[in-house]
Length: 334
Ligand code: 13P
Image (cartoon, rainbow, N blue to C red; front, side):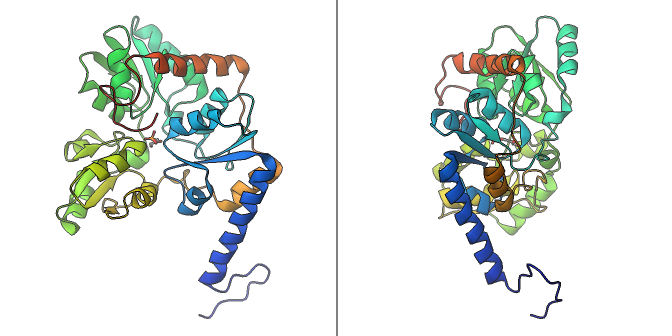
């Protein structure tokens, strides 16, 4: 194919581009060994980034697994709050977020000052914060939760009023399944909130017989037409347990890659308009390599915030009955 000669670093073919990716991946693995690093990749990351990771999965489980390793360095291929969580759980390891601008718009919809005020306005309400929050928000919360255990956590905490921060869709999903008053924060994940019933139905028309798996950050009307509702780490099990062979997956489209690997006999499709999280896609093999070489950008927190945020995570872990499989647990990792 003809191309314009733009000079240095020109790539002439797809094969050359792939080789280049492969060369960068080899470098990443070499520098990773030298640094005694562990690479984590969230399920929404680009396939080539998931492929070089030591551990892939959902947000909190990655940080918990990394804390168990003897690595000196954690490279978190994900978004900012996830790297903060890794630092909360592993304060003695260096935590790197290869793309400093990889934020989570949902996490940014709640600020610690606002949550502290809402707590004052709702005396007696227990504050449960989704893991998709800043460390400062976790530090002013009673409990943390994940999308796999949110129902369980809200059921298990003391009291009958809960302030649920920041995702209104996950909060509504929880409220419908517990016997408590749940006060909703008005936050949302724009990637999930944009998914419509029409987009799901249009994908179903193209794949009649498919079942719908949705993340609980989707709107209630999308959840209402779904066969399975799961955190990202609970989705593969749901597909493997089902008799269906085709699935419409209402979550960020990066999820199709790990699902395809976990259940190769099945086919997975996005709703009609592909849900893409722009910040999840910022991290590339090149940025991972740069982070490992320079040990930057590092994520740290003031110790006082870290310890208070850790308290919210530890109180969540102490709730009984805990191990996964308890009532209100979707089967996913933590
Ligand atoms: P999971 O905890 O299900 O991986 O969700 C993370 C997330 O950010 C969903 O948007």
